[in-house]
Image (cartoon, rainbow, N blue to C red; front, side, top):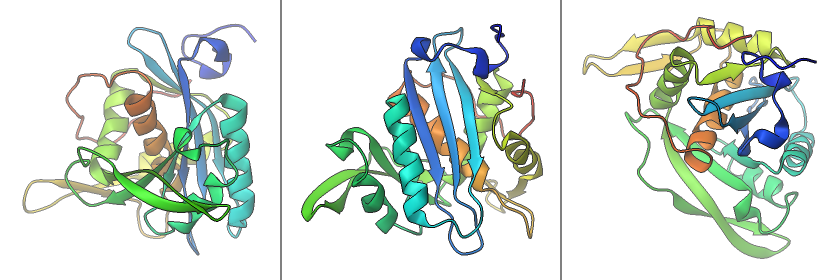
Length: 231
């Protein structure tokens, strides 16, 4: 496959400075969703999405943890995992990762706050009967979504047509923005729809900018997410 600056699936994995797995952990009627992203030294430093997977409803969390651990190992990646409604999954995954797990795993609690917390807090987990801790970031859902919009608008986020990319595209285009009386905005999927892949993408983007290349300096775009980043 010939190289294309618009298609992350053609970019050399060896040229990436880092990889991040973003995982949204589904509960009951929601899917688990995985997005694999890397950071490439383009101008500006660009996040390339090279795998997108929506797990079938009812997939055992042990199978999800196995697949995430495999992606971390194969790509020497860091996993940023949603722990909002299932903190036990973090320990389940940690036991499957190269040790010490703190080097490969970050937990995230997604809230309705206006901005991300300035610093993480320790989250205690047990691995093989031994107590350890990983970083746990409290993240704003609105800031996560607006960051995706900013990255797409600035052409610093490219999404390959890999895996369940069409489902991700549909979720992004369907996201609804509501402006509160205070003037702040919130984001959600329409009734009966899902945003699992969008949240996995947002965690991958957060991880790439926080733990990979420095964050790009730009104003957040408070508008509907476009599909401009697709190849």
